[in-house]
Image 1 (cartoon, one colour):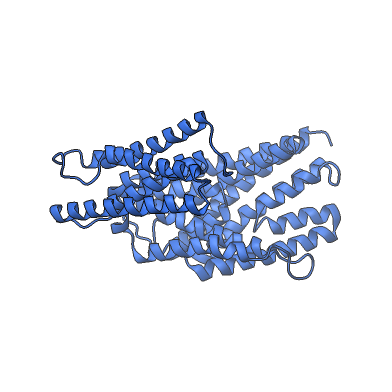
Image 2: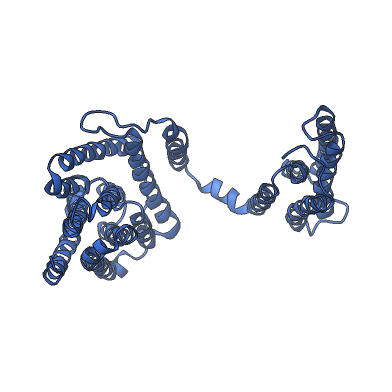
Length: 435
C-alpha cells in the first residue's frame, strides 16, 4: 500500500475492520470461556476487540510519522507490539497458573489479533478479513482437530506428507519441456499422473475410513472418476489383491468411476465441439447407463451380505508403485504421439487407442479441436470413442494383472457390457447420421 495519508472515510472503514477482526476472534474466545467466573480469564471478547483496534491505532500513528515502512513508523508498530505482547503473556501465564492449565493459544491469538488489526490499516482489507475468519475457524475447531490428530496413524500421516511433497515441492521444480525422441515425454505430465494415482488411492483410503466399507468405496469411486477412472482402477485393484475389502464393492467403485469418465468426456466434447458431441453422446450415455446399472445390481446383490464388513487399509498408497505406473503411462503417451503423427487420420484413431490407456481427457481435447479442419467429424468422433473404449478395456487388463479372481471377473463383465452397449449405440448413430 502506498505511503500516503488515508482520507477520513477510508480511515474509518479500516478502523472498523480492525475492530471487527478483534470482535470476531474475541467472540470465539469469549464463547469458549463463557462459563468462567468474571475476572478469572486473561482475555475475552472486549479485550480482543480492543486488541484489534490497538493494532490499527499503532499503524495509524505510524502513518502520521511518515509511513509504516519508515524508521519512525516501524519503531512505533514494533514497540507497540512488543509492549502489548509482554502484557498479554503475563496475564495468560497467570491464568494458566490459576487454572493449572498449559496453553499458549489465547496469547498467540491475541498477538495475531493485534497484527491483523495493524494489517487492516496498512494492507489489503480483504486479506485481513479472510485471515481473521480463518483464525476464528481454527480456534473454534479445537475438539475436531485434536480428535483427528489422535486418530491419525503414522502411515496416514507419512502418506499425506509424501503426497503434499510430491505436489508442492517436487512438481514446481520438474521441467515442463519434453525429453526424448518423437516429441519426447513431458516429465511434469508424468509426475502429474503419479500425483493423480497417489491422490485417488488416498481418497479411497480416507473415504472407507470415514464413510465405512460400503459407502466409502462407492463415494471414492464416483469422486475419483471425476479426475481419473484409471487411477481409481489401479487403487481398487491393489486393495482387492491385498484383501482389503470386498472385490464386488471395489469393482462397483470402478463401475461408478467409469460412468463418471463417460460423462466427463461428453462434457469436454460439448464445450469444444458440439457437432462431434452429437455423434459421441449416444454411445457415451449408453455406456454410462450400463456401468451405473451393473454397479446398482452388484450393490443390491452384495447388500446385506457385505453389511457391516470391517475393512482396514494398511497403507493409503505405495509411492514407488504409483511412480512406476506413471512412467509406464508416460511411455504409452509417447508411443501414441508417434503413431498419430506418422499415419494421418488412421494414425489419429490408432494413436487415440494407445493414448486412451493413459489419458482420455487429453486425447478428447486434442481430437475435438481437430474437427472439422484436419479430421472430419466422424473420424474425430470415432477416435474419441476409440480412446474411451481402450480406457475401458485397459481396466480388464489392470484387474487381471494386479488382482485376478472375482475382482477381475467383475471388471471384465462391467467393461464388456459398456463396450457392447456403446457399440450398439454407435452403430445406430452412424447408421442414421448422414456421412
